[in-house]
Image (cartoon, rainbow, N blue to C red):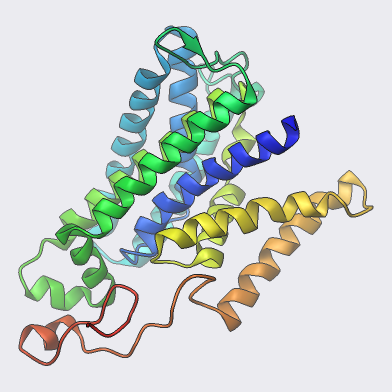
Length: 311
């Protein structure tokens, strides 16, 4: 029972990561490979402030969100002023810088990580059991989903999708796309920090290898599998990608071979989906539509967010 609860809690944590990363790659067309870095910043800041300063877990989580959001903005502002290629390169370097900091700084425990992270408490109630942490993770996942839904269905969300489809046309309409990119980057980084804080408080121990480049690829995988540009797809992708390695446990292979087989399975999964179902499990093929510039001058009605024709 404890094993099942632990897996379900981890699934919800990765659902939050999938939702936050989908804001970037699915709705905004921005590709970053540093999402695990923001995930780690949230985990370390929340863990250290709760353990060493005795802060309430909500305050510690908020500080983790602030730190990750600030670093997201610092990464995005210079990279996004040029082209998307600069963002990929900058995020790659940023991922390794943050990982090296986790692995070498004394305050982060270097390679030993941060042990003895206290259980979260709220109004005198301590979330000691696995079931209580599962319920807490479910609440945070629901709040994250509600926030992402509100954001993507707002006028700002429509700007993000239009920017993804035709950036030049949106600039021609007077939209500040650099500001939109930085804002969505900060929001995505802050939400990734929520997942990091939940991970730290759930398992009471974190170390640098939890937040490597491989973890960023894992997050990218679940978005591709579930469907980029669709929030339910992030949830479905988390279910598939988190449960896949657990299914491999039933194979009679040694622990030495288990990790390479798991990575191979992820790689094959991504290749198969990119070749035969690039829109993911819940995504739909986008209809061939006119550009935002053509629609702006009366060329036709815009398609819906999923590519469907308007009613």
